[in-house]
Image 1 (cartoon, rainbow, N blue to C red):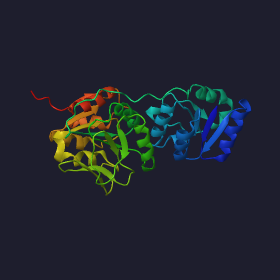
Image 2 (tube, rainbow, N blue to C red):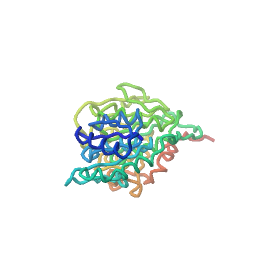
Image 3 (tube, rainbow, N blue to C red):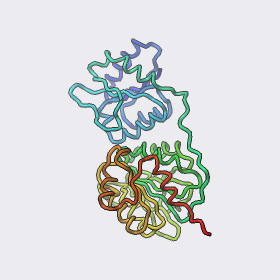
Image 4 (cartoon, rainbow, N blue to C red):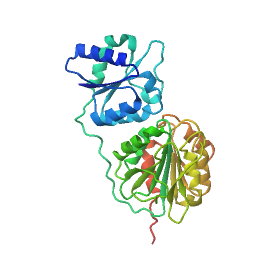
Length: 327
């Protein structure tokens, strides 16, 4: 078995290595001291289990890392110092937690987490859907925050090489933007790529902001073009969902937009304005949301045409983009 020990302390890394090696001499070890390094190592070396400190797991970007581990079927154990509470994020439910001062007594628990993995099992295949006749003028906009990465993985499986242009804003740390793009691309038959300023929005493509230095927006022309807008945070974020949604107001009747799980209210105002301007708008329902914040605010503001469970949002977005059949 191969273990990735992710901790800020090299002394604790060595202690974990000794404890596991004593019980399992054939074990192999990798180490990382940051979440970025842990992500890159896991993506390329695919350990059986990641052992990570509570401090690193408490970063917002850990949600993306955990989604990668799920796709690659890599186990995860969180260690915490005495007196430090384990992270309470909803997406951590079910993960084993081990106090650092009792790590040697929890070796069996750690090994069981590694033993649950199956690196030979195939990753969920990209969905294959029948080619539909989409209106070439339509486009899809999606905003998400806490819990949004798994939600996006569920939705993008419905997008193929013929889908309308899709623009996504997910609240993720800038250093992890490229990792998110690679992750979504692995689950999608459309091309998931980093947006470039002045790039035409093409069918069969999904666009995300390249980092957190710009807002991903649309330049309203006869044919929509992407625009990386400079400036400060909007609704507390950069990139901001509200910035994306409001930029599409001049073309609202051509837009199908969804606001997914997330804390706060970014996107709620923009979605409401889009609906009033003629867009088809969707809010994720409370039952399937990790955090029913942003879609709840949008619902209360009257910005949601239909509130749907997660697994139906992808097809609903595409159905709203179908070309009208003329008699």
